[in-house]
Length: 511
Ligand code: AMP
Image (cartoon, rainbow, N blue to C red; front, side, top):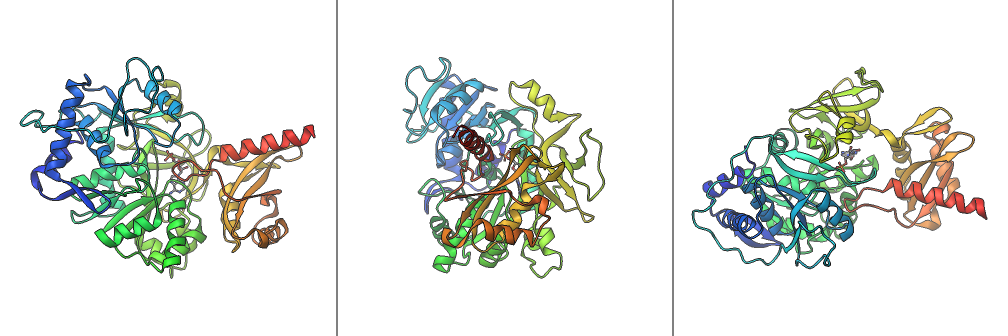
């Protein structure tokens, strides 16, 4: 089963439905979308010699051609390798090389200097190409098994070197079928806005929206600007988008400035990183019942658990605080278990590693058997996340395995320390990491961005914290920053903060 069948069938059923938009301007209906895809597919075969199973990399900012190119690649049974457009070209070159891509599409075809790509990989302009329609040629997508590789998903690298997650057509189909069941029903009158990079989570929303014949909208800025999203929503209506928690926070700040209340937005799906309760409260107060949370990872994309909109919006529920801090209920198509260090299942309420099995789970890491063996054990994906189930089936993440701080023999989960500090009215953002400590093994360090630096100091935060949480979890040190380092998906780069701490300590020792 080739996922490109979904485009083929949408174009047959609804040839004149609006499909691709740049801002509020329509560029193509479904008939033209599919015709462009077939034209590009033809070029891939005849100009670039791409065949079934070959890899084609995309190193471009969001644009409508991004979707056309991806579908062209799948149409002929080849594999897309979407690369985060914010990477340095040497990193993108590394990925193209690792994936042994035959072609790499960039905006203008002029990103790489001669010799920067391997000899077998050609750079091509992905935008502004003249696509000839090819009549009856390539009338149907290439027929393939569900197991065939479709998308090499290079992880965002918050935990070290990027690895190519192998996702098959079957993975993408299973993920997309679960979406209307467990996240948000979709209909053809809706629009999906790509405000986060299409190379990552946001790009995965295209499938179900293609399947339902909905509109696909790339903002004119080709990135994320809260006010632009609001304008698009007001102009186009029935808009859904994926937004990392940091993006939701910016949308709330902007909405508060202008008095915007979510008009035209149907759904904001958030996930990919923890959303602090204080921020979620603000978001619900501002946007009402428009938020849905998903928890997944590249290795089981979008699909481990979801927290439904009605649960998030039900602020009157006596247990709201606890449930809203969870990542919700397990998706229909996967098994999720909590296991101990020997991979033995644990009972409800006991924290351990989250493991997942099912049709959305990746087939392994590209050309990296050692990492595949470590991560896929007896068919279970070891997520590296720690969490627990409550008696009603809500899953709460406490942290990633390697983020746990062990201080004086006690485990401290950065997430819970962050939750408490984030509630302080003068704290804008916070991130907690562990630092080597001669006495305690590790100690807790909080990086804090204040709303107003003049109003916040260490003493105030310590008082706030000790009034709310066990003192062994208390940050031993506060580092005030004007901003936190983030990757292009808005995740705080904890590795960078840890590195900074190490450097700062060794410099202090020399002085
Ligand atoms: P990535 O593969 O880059 O998408 O990163 C996936 C990781 O992000 C997961 O393993 C979690 O640690 C984290 N993550 C994803 N969704 C959520 C969520 N809803 N809440 C908290 N953390 C999340």
